[in-house]
Length: 331
Image (cartoon, rainbow, N blue to C red; front, top):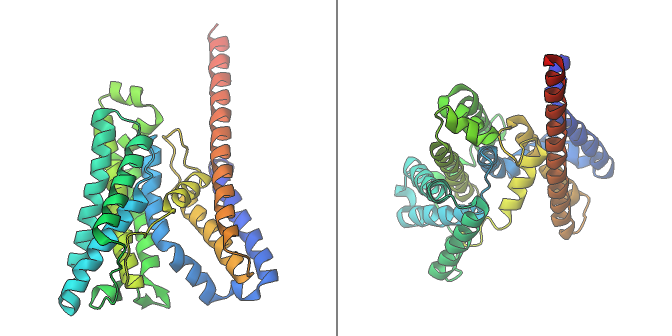
């Protein structure tokens, strides 16, 4: 039990913070703690939650992807164009395949540049962010794709036990990611490369393969999230996904995934998204101006980065102490 608490300290703290914040918000706005509102919080953040899970896998490798918002926009526009063109004749399966294929291709493009050309991920993804956004603005001329009809639009809006399908898909992605990271060879390779790339290479683990899989995975989840967005909102525009990058990074890092790589927290990432959702929902119910939401996101990101750096320094100090103690014992 003590080992569990020690290993899950960050997650337990997040749960405590969420509970305290929920109690405070409820005292100000009683409708917060209703079943309908809690389901809405989960539903409104499921798309971000799916993408955050992919971001976590990339950060585990010691990289970062700030182009996901632009990739999200491109997939929503292309998927919506397909649904608009065929209408009732469109297929949910084909729509999902389009989203997954385009998202994966864009993710692999980033991974290929990072892995084979040894370019910093932040530089590569900033570049692809602007290329994709610029292309979308030029092609669409600011026009929306709306009035969508067909079977695809029913996917995200279908409910089971009053809970929208997007929430179940989010939970399925979390479970899939757990098995990917901890019960497959490529998952263990991703963790190993993120923990110590040089050591991983010495035992025959390919960092190129790990990077490609990580970026391909976030691309696939971004594509999935984009299709769900089209289904849920029945509209798409080139500005979709603006600002998503910071929210995803903040939620992932505050959940316990280390910027330095090698450490993942699936539960923490879920709680990080939930915390941001609770804050946003609470501010809306409390009738607080919208700009405070951006301020809250910025503060969460700063706290997340600072705590990640603190944990890394603490871990380094503990490692040095253990090494020194072992040397003294050997002497």
